[in-house]
Image (cartoon, rainbow, N blue to C red; front, side, top):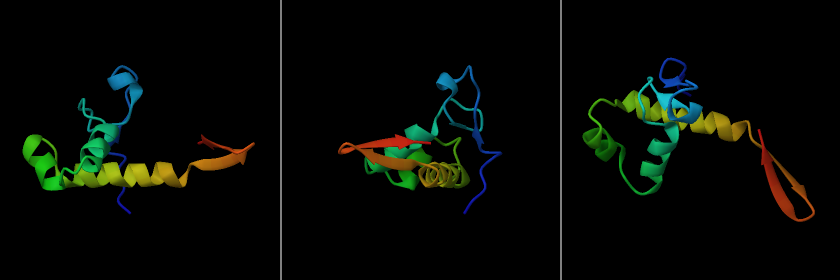
Length: 83
C-alpha cells in the first residue's frame, strides 16, 4: 500500500479541514467522486494537469485506510458507523 503523508494534507482553513492533495483545494472526496462517476484516472489527470498519478493513488490508499479503520455496529436493526 502506498504511503501518502506527504501527499494528503489536512489544513483547518482549507475546504473545511477535509483531506486535500498537496495543500491544493482538491479533496480526496473530489477524486473518489470523479472515479465513482466513471471518470478514468487518465481523464482526471487530463482535466487537472497539476495532479499526478501518485496523487490519485494516494487518495485511494487514504480511502482504503479510512475504510479499514471504520467499525460498523448493528443495533435495533440499524447500522451505525464510527471511526
